[in-house]
Length: 415
Image (cartoon, rainbow, N blue to C red):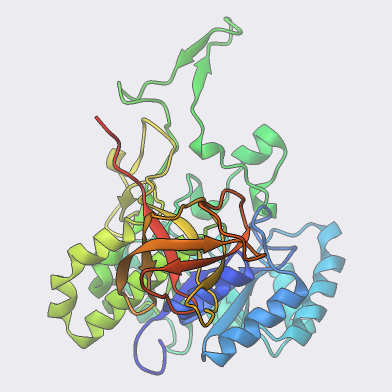
């Protein structure tokens, strides 16, 4: 728990920009990956310089930064891990997230002053496992996603108060036990346990009878489709009281490959829900429909409570497609404004003069405004901004503050 008695809100970041968004929009801590040795090889990840800047930025706000180093290491990885930890010792993140015992020993040897948190990849499902890691020097253990809320409470009651428990409360679920998947390696040679998962659990499958090669038969759960491994996303926004009462110290959001819009939306909504609950459980309960509506404005695959209330059933799977629900499109992050009221921003998706867009504020306020004028980086008027990551200056009908996020709702399909 934090000093204020609340659980920590731990949010992922795929880039320096997203880290800053996470901090401003309500995270207590942010977890990131370096360019090697984390389990998100396809994420943008952080260079040494970006990592140092991100840590400085977070610390200015009184927030913490954790770095993932949770691969399952082979012999060939160990010397690189040793060099990497020597660099991290100079950068000084607040914690390392580790799953491999050999990597754990290297971290203790090379940077003993940095906290070690044990990754969910270590399949932490019982209190003796928690005690084991604490005796070795771990400060925190991340619970496996396969635990029920009752099991989490039992673990909390059997471990020392100073051993922290971190639990995933929101984001994508994996078909395999705590993410230990072999499908990607088998199909493509890209190992999920080395950070290169191709997510074959989202693919559509057929079966082939051995004596009839080339004759593909559909896998029919029923008439709804064949995406038999495709789980809904975890969402516990409506169950904050149960998470708090179970004694979880850190509420972890999944998504180190997500956009700034996703991170801002999820961080801000969970921040509001946690704070409301600690102000008044009645206030929190009355606002659950609002939280659920807000959390649905980012991309998601429909929602489930995962294993928290028992083993998932057929209702936790999505059989007919592998696509996200997308409520809003990210347009960019508001930068500094000039004397004329124009705001500098780096465009992330196309929008045009005359469009009605939404300003999303860290405070929780959403403002609908109109795009009145647009200039390119040379001051030339534009009617729209079709080029990704183009630096533009925009005049809105109401000036956003720096770090406000600009988004637009996806139109409802016409029947």
